[in-house]
Every structure is written in structure tokens, then in C-alpha cells.
Image (cartoon, rainbow, N blue to C red; front, side, top):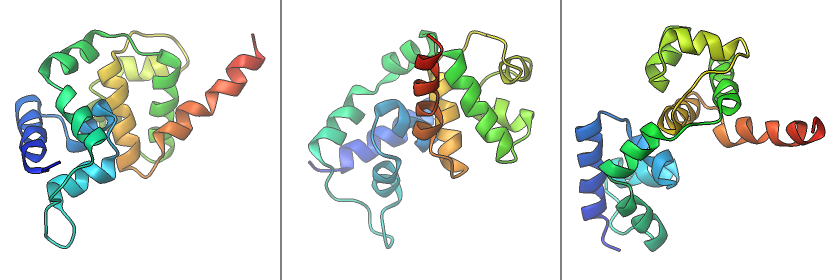
Length: 152
């Protein structure tokens, strides 16, 4: 599909929401490399076409979906693992709060192992921050699954 309308749509979402491109990518379930190529291009040339699946996913991400993600609860244990990964990579609590949109007190609460309410959008923001710091967020969250089953 012609990439130009989707490039404009991602830029519009970024402008309207203030969210970085990695968050838009994670929220739409489009690979970050694809969104990066869509926005920045390779060798100073913008991506001309976009695969249909990625185009559909970007099209479905709108202001309503982002608002829904802001209200949908996230698994605090998954958020905790993401935040701890960022801390271990050298991020300060203030940086983690800024990246994730979670206030610093809640960041501290989560990192000590206590439960606190977080939105799915905050989790997506933490995932995007992990990506930016060279951490694979999917591996961070997946590591927990087998251990969680053993304890049950």
C-alpha cells in the first residue's frame, strides 16, 4: 500500500498526543523498524510502500484506541519487570517516570514489588523505552511466564 497516508497518520498521532514514534509502533503492534523506516526512511529516502498488515494496524490505531489503552489496566508485574530492566540499564527513577508516564512514587512502589494500578498505555510506553535502551521488552515480559506457572 502507498505509505504516504500512513506516514502522515503516524506524524499526526505523534503531534496530537506527544507520544514518541516507538510508542505508536508498540501500541499499533507494528515493528519499530517499520515505523522508523516509514518516518525516516533509509538512505534519506522515505518508505514508498507499506505491507498491508502493518497498514491496517496503523490505521486502526486512533485517538479512541489510545484513550482506551490509557484506561485499560496493565499487569503490574509485567510493568515492574520492564521498569526494573530500565533501572538495571542505568535509567534513574525520574527518567523511568518520564518515559513511562508513571509518577515517580508509583515507579518506586512497583519496583519494590508492591502492586499499583498502571494503564496499558503506560506499559506500552515502558516497552518502547526498553526498546530505545536496547532491551527487548518482549523477552523481559516473557521471562516471567514459565516461573509464574510453576508457582501455581
